[in-house]
Amino acid sequence: MKKFAFLAATVAVALFATSARATFELRISNPEAGATVTILDGGVGDLNPLTGAITFAGTVGNFTFQVTSSATKPVLGSAGSPEMDLHVFIAAPVGGVGVQTLVISASDIGFQPIVPGWHVNYTANDSSLANALISTSVTAYAASSNLNFDTSGVNTGAIAGFPGSGGAASFLAGGTTAPYSLTVVDTIKTNPGLLFISDDALLTPLPEPASIAMLVAGVPVLGLLWARRRKAKVA
Image 1 (spheres, rainbow, N blue to C red):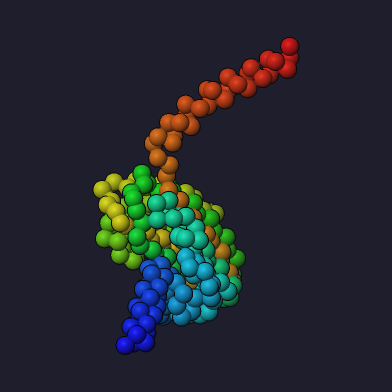
Image 2 (image 1 turned 120 degrees about the vertical axis):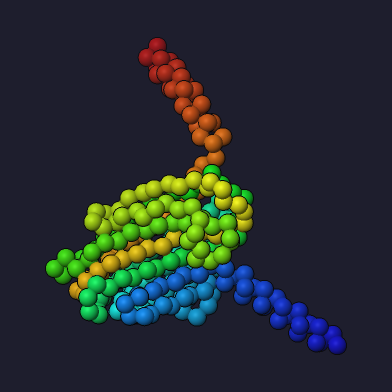
């Protein structure tokens, strides 16, 4: 009886640990090829042993990835101070016929309490044959449903990475309630012939208004101290 109870408890703990890690997910899709791969944190296809970090290498549809990685809590940030990083590196010619679309999404749930908003910084670099790359963009979402890949909540709007080399945008929490999910979506459109693309999107929380007020209030004080120190040196 005791042995059965121990086995039941072990299975319960294992199931809980698996479900806890599975809240963070990475999804890669190439619609034109009808291909979608979803990698769970700690699941099949995840090359990173750390909880809160997913690394994938391989082929999805007409795209071959040297490495694609994403990180969030507890590796990066926390439930109360949310951060998420999504990095994509394709290092092989893109196949297929006609325009090819690649959508890479990272999503995690259980963020709380609500922060004032979020900021996303996006950078992109590419090398292609005959200007194969058409466009790249990133959009970040926060959803009160607390469901993975929910894009119905407040968002940054599309941040263009190409043409150009990237950009940044912030968005406010608005009516978002806790716990909530965060999703970062990277969309790449290209013609066949793209040699490689490397881009990165980093989501961080906006500071609390009180923190901003303290910073602003501290600037004159620092200026006064600097002036006094300079005056003392001159004397």
